[in-house]
Image 1 (cartoon, rainbow, N blue to C red):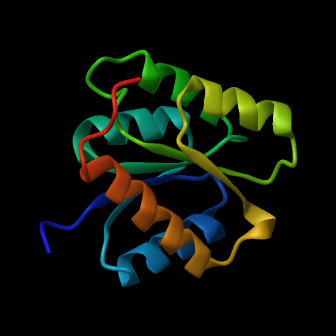
Image 2 (cartoon, rainbow, N blue to C red):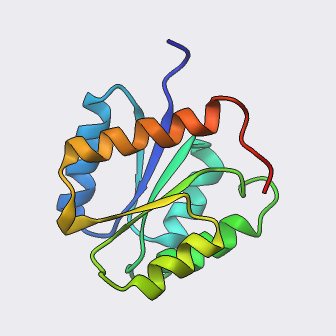
Length: 134
């Protein structure tokens, strides 16, 4: 297999951040973590992830603002983003998807194994046959 895919988890709940990082490390990924959108943007620039798992509700800078800034930056806009949310708030989710997020997971509805499947799919899509221009 090629070099390990790098995943940045942006999540303000420390317990969940730790669990997600551990699961992804066990899945064979190189993993970084950030506790809010500002921290996430800083880490993206130094860590250069292949995928970002992004919580929406966070202090300092929320996931929507981070997503808008990512997609507004020509160097960062092509990094796939999967939204992690507690919300069953489909308006926010559809807003995130319209801003360019590739997919979303409602935290209460998935198991960690499901997350690994989703990550594999999104990374394969990003690395595979060349991402289609949108």
